[in-house]
Length: 169
Ligand code: ZN
Image 1 (cartoon, rainbow, N blue to C red):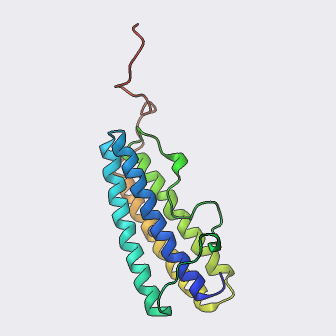
Image 2 (image 1 turned 120 degrees about the horizontal axis):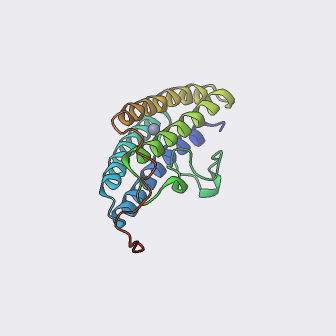
Image 3 (image 1 turned 30 degrees about the vertical axis):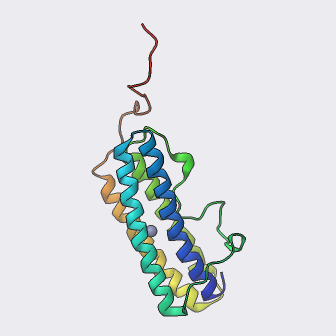
């Protein structure tokens, strides 16, 4: 991540992929009639979409137009882009608490991604910007932590589907 162009392309893609993933999850929850989770994913998608716009605006200020890279040119630390919610953690009966825990992990992933670049990039401007973005992601994570206070961990039986057919006892 040693040029500003490469860094900005990653920053924009990271937020856009977060939006797409939340929209995908909102759709999946709606399919399962889990409206509480769907609405929360919608709100998270909107928030990420605002961040995406903000990052794109800053990128234009700094380095002209953001040129998307080819899919294989993105160098994410793991398979997914770091702010995309982890699909493996989704469940059709998930509660708002679980939704927010997924979002928290996504924000923390983004923060770590930027913190790594702030530490390792050869370009001082990229390091500086990555430091700013890491602080912003920490802010997003803090917002979600406060949000989580309103949605405490549900009891252990949340995965039981009360509508599913049961054996007569
Ligand atoms: Zn974020």
